[in-house]
Length: 237
Image (cartoon, rainbow, N blue to C red):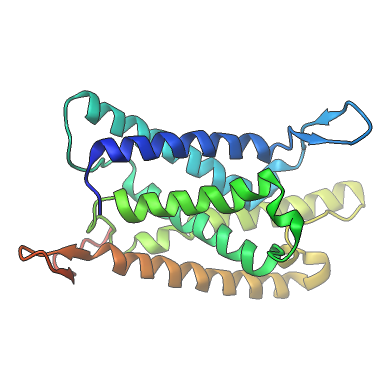
């Protein structure tokens, strides 16, 4: 952990700039059709979990950065901000899963298109890595409660329910097949049972990752300067 507030402030300002760029890029604003002057804004940006998790990162990042700047302006040099700590933990899990699922299931790291796309590198790589590092290095330990990892399931599950309902309503209203944003949510191809199976697998990934982070949160330095895990005085919620 690094309790230097000035270092935290500089890091978070840089993160907010990069995160803001990532959020802009999720709208497809800089998508250019070669040979024309058409710059269009994507109308399906809200369907992607990647985008939603990036919006959460930006919101939490700005709130945390503002709290850090306030402490520095007040003359404080050491410490940690306590702004939206549970939400920050849940958002860290969200964006970590975004990163891991993309690089393992959806992205092609061996292709040039993966590395030469600014949007891909910002909202799939840079923002997730920077946000995770912020939580790991600049967040006070022993702040994660026992049930916080389970809270990290709430937003992803709401997202899944929303996309499934939206897809069903869209198909019923238009008679056309809805283009699901991810293959593991494609009810038309997998059926509801297949989608539920994939969601269960992803929830297990959420659970494993969030409880690994929970254990890491209990790593502290004792009075002798040695690192140890401290599971005393745990809070449930």
